[in-house]
Amino acid sequence: MLLKLSWRNIWRNKRRSLVVLGSVIVGIIAVLFMNGFMNGMLNQMLSNQISTSVSHIQIHKKGFNDNKTVQNYLPNPANVDNILRDNKDIKAFSKRVITFGLISSASNSSGVYINGIVPEEEKQVSIINRQIVEGEYFSGGKGEIVIGSKLAEKLDVTLGDKVVAMSNTPSGTIGSEVFRVVGIFKTFSSEFDKSFIYIPMQTVQEMLNIDDKIYEFAIVTKDYHKVEEVKNSINEELNQNYEVLSYKDLLPFLVYQIDLSKESMWIFNVIIELALIFGIINAMLMAVFERINEIGVLMSIGMKNIKIFTMILLEGLIIGIIGTAVGLGLGYLIMLPLQKVGLNLAIYTESLESFGVGAVIYPTVSIDDVIGILIAIPFISIVGAIYPAYKAIKLDPVYAIRYV
Image (cartoon, rainbow, N blue to C red; front, side, top):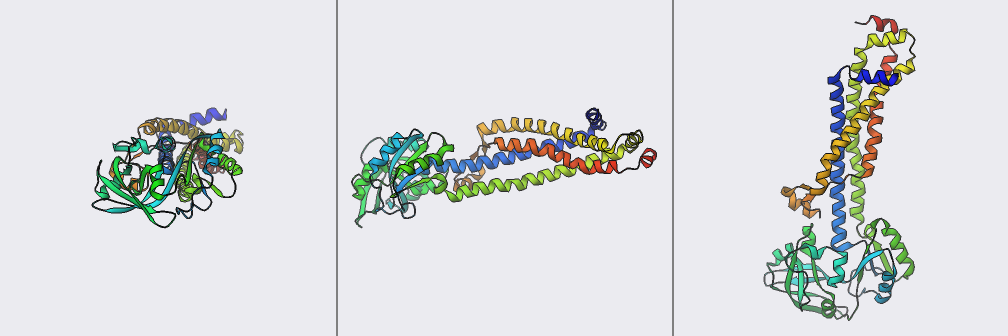
């Protein structure tokens, strides 16, 4: 009976009820959009870092990540190779020679990260081959180099132009080599495009005079949720001369930024929810004042205060449930195409690329966001109805019946 009375009471003043429902629906859509936008942007920042250079897991000689000198090459890389091939949770891995160096053209020079790679292996762990905007990845010719678009602009070079790369060798001399630009890539990060160059690993080994030594294994797991588990299993098979680092170890600031941003989104959610609470309080108070006579009659015929209190709470709950259902439905319909085509923010391209995001943001709504809304909004609706319900049961029946 109380549920039936609550339902009828809601629709006595359709305009007011629809306004309250509208505010709940708009609030839910706003929360979904902001959470989705932030999730999408932060996930893209992390995904772009992982897919361009970091990968899921890296293996180095112990201390290499803190001191990337050419003397810190991996001991016994063949043993590491065998361990990785036997691990069923690893999708692919690539060997790398990594060092700092200088690249020069006829016009300019710049400090860079030199990446000596096995082109076919690198295809499996990074997306550089898919980011080529001019020329080709590697054809197998001698003296090939692939550089970023920003670096090409700085050096004032185009496809086919010659550049010189040089770096320190383990013996302390300078190793150098002349290369011809065969490919120019453009990623989501302008800083990356300005700083990284790719050369076939054998060529870098010859340039640095390090024989067949390597400095890094970059690993991609089959399930990124198991990264820490795979990292620990590799650690158990290697001795203390190695360091096995996941992307969380390699990108601590970015991981912290993602966690901090997710926490800060609660502030936005709380602001929206507080606005909804006050809106519901206002609407329910108006509904109570309009029905003072009716409430007085219900009290005079013996309806207990707890039932009147519950009836008004049910009115708030019904509004919350309907608003939540409609808001999530409309929010999903709005977010669905955005998740596929993305939100083009081309006017902010330079700013976004400096953060490593890219001009197109793909909002992502997580199941946690949906569950949070499903729980929070009906609860808030009940909380917003508590004060009006309290005011109702405090009415004097005689006064209420005579109220005009």
